[in-house]
Image (cartoon, rainbow, N blue to C red; front, side, top):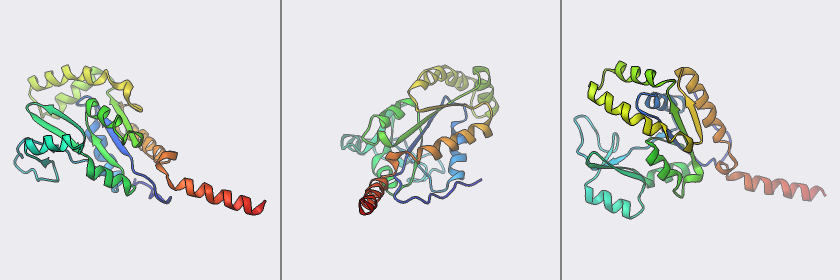
Length: 220
């Protein structure tokens, strides 16, 4: 099923944030959301780490020297940033502002710390944040093991970190329990569709109401 094309004029784009502990389904739901609406833009992060084999600058990450990254942060050029395992990561502000100004939504797959930085930024009023919970901790571990991507030590570290992530669920606009992927995705689509219709996302309404007022006065 594809997204319905917006027919209303001048809609302002949303910053759609998805967060979850590793294994709760955030990445899968992000991919489904991008397939559902091809107009969505995925926020490409900037990083100071070196490219890995096969990674393309501007597609997988914006690869920056540490000095350039810090200068961008100082110039307020990052919506959010963090230092992780010896490298800096962040979300460049300019492409996001350009996209939402054109009525395009931007999708962020980030943790709670990055989410809070964006929510507290000047673009916060145009943010939709959704946290994805697993149905149980046992199921979360089962999914991590079932992916076959990580060693037992890495899985143990991810499990230890999971509760810290889950403990911040209350700071999000919406919370979904991913007990069934199809059902969770249907709920996510409903949330996105409804939030696109918020008054704040439709700046054209001011002129429309003024036009209605003028018509009303002409009839009086």
